Image (cartoon, rainbow, N blue to C red; front, side, top):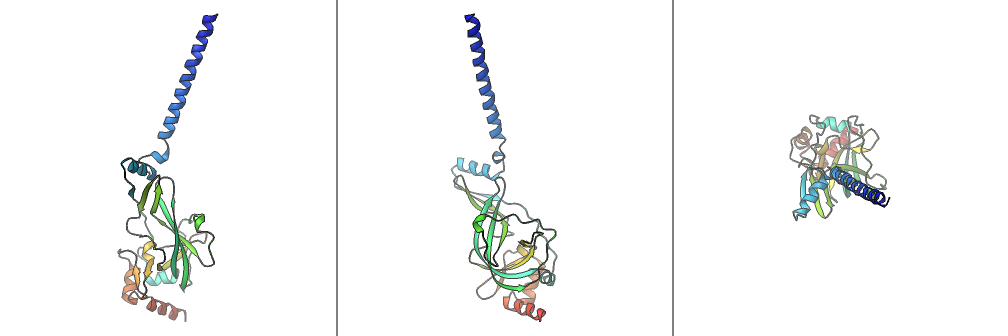
Length: 237
């Protein structure tokens, strides 16, 4: 009888050990299957960079196909809202896996055109980070793919590819805006509908890519905000 009891105790011990090993195996598999650990995710790249003693890493961003590649300037001015606004705040947001999006808050300075068309092909803009809310009267936010954020001690920068450089806080911009189906502002032409406004009133495209809107802005208005303003006012009158 005593021998049977000892045998049963030994079997129970083996079962417990086996169960613990099986549970540890499951936990190990779960760790391996964690999406953040998959090759190519931002968090995995950050951890790999940290293991090699690096404090920063640059990651190529998403390839964005912006619309309105063939739209003319008059079409854009007639269909969309044109405003001058100052970038006053920003917040990067990490999606937990493969992208960083930076949200920018803008203070409107002047509305050159009140026309506003709903962009039916645009997806609904996500809710901005709470740090940028609430918005004061007239203020609005715009998202841009790319940005920089610290992940586990490594500064990770996602580059949008040079087509859409970051907005600079305190800088003034001419923005060609539309609205998504929910009514939130969006940029229907992407970076091709954005110009930086310099202190002397010159409009500078934010990238070097060719586009009809940029070409006509130069040829017809010499990249002058004053000449563009006069043109739009004369059309209203």
